[in-house]
Length: 74
Image (cartoon, rainbow, N blue to C red):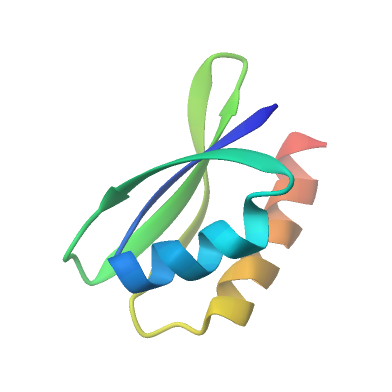
């Protein structure tokens, strides 16, 4: 199964986990930083697919992830 690593606030991680858990194995790290990121494991290396601010909407984060995932991983 494909793996994601999410670094963000607990609230954002909970929402993103619900969106991605059916297609990815998710690992996460809670952070109080003003930005978050989503990384994908590709060829045994973590590649940053998406960076976002903590006030970004979850729908926008998912859209950014999907577009960048299509470009970099498919």
